[in-house]
Figure 1 (cartoon, rainbow, N blue to C red):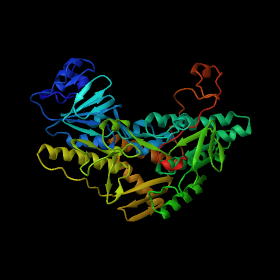
Figure 2 (cartoon, rainbow, N blue to C red):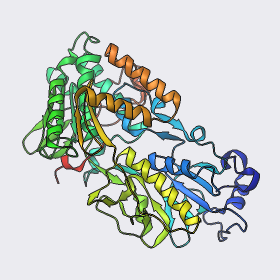
Figure 3 (cartoon, rainbow, N blue to C red):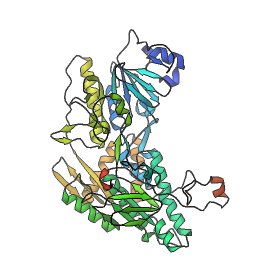
Figure 4 (cartoon, rainbow, N blue to C red):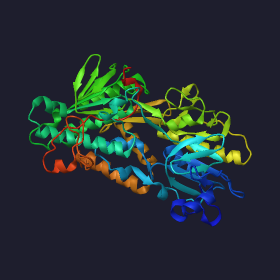
Length: 489
């Protein structure tokens, strides 16, 4: 998708007409009737699909080298997903945790294409997009993961997950609207339902969401209403396994639970959700009336992996070689959340540092291949991971040996996330907002924006009717994504 020579530093969409772009980069329109023509004298073409942690680090490693690189992503920006829950809970704005690719990537040999890949033709070394096809010499798939409801896709309308900016803004809208609806509700039972928030899934995302929801009710919104007491809001965390944060030791898991309970969160472990229907969440032992349900209980790999024709695990992840390639295809690399790979008998976790390391290592193996050298197996040094519960409370492990909790772990969590954020402006903005929240216990991003709230029957009322006072309806429950264990089958 790149041009050669003097045009390398300009993006296709900015500098070339469609026909010129096709001739220069080996692009044809589907159904054009002509075979893809490879360029005669050209540099190797590397296509990276997905601009998350893995994809962006792969592109940066290849920047300035003697290859042409095309980054393809459905969005025009890189998103720092670990802080997405803070957008959903009104502490940060989307721009604080994201950055446009064209500002983050300045290398002359890299082009950015906003688009969606539909299929990989492994034999022809060709990608099919919605409006064109692209040839590659090397392919890096970094398309990440999506929500999974494990056979209960009908739950998505009431409890969508947290993976995108759109998800975060919708969750924020529902959380904030719940208080507004409770403020004007005269029926005590319905008011309780509006002030009940259920988080399904006790992994890092679920724990972080539950802690933030408790802080919103007991600190941020405590004095903002006249007819309700936000501190009476009920926050419930449901986890199917015996404890929360199972990736950590039992001791850290117990500390995390106690921190949540001190915030006022009801933690129910060993509770498998069997139904999310209407305005109720059901398990074998309980039924909870709640207008806001947040999903943090399941992810599945991008469906693009299925077009590779190779072995996948139950979650749809690719079982790659130790060199991060698809078995039998040393020109195709798979990185990020799409990878199933064991190191020292343990599967690689879906964490940002792991994804960054995978992307960088895949790029280095491509460079080795171009030099005629043997590919090397992936190695990763785990510096640690952390999960935050609330203000001054977190748990984590450093260097796979040292367990931290409380304020020390919280400061470590802050430092790590500031370090990994892209862009100086983002780091300053996030630091400022964190300081503001910490000192004032207020969250500045409390704007209810977007489509009209959901009505009782589940249909959206036109915004014009809401403005005229005719739409006084209810919202559906909603959610965030993480672990399968909270769901009953």
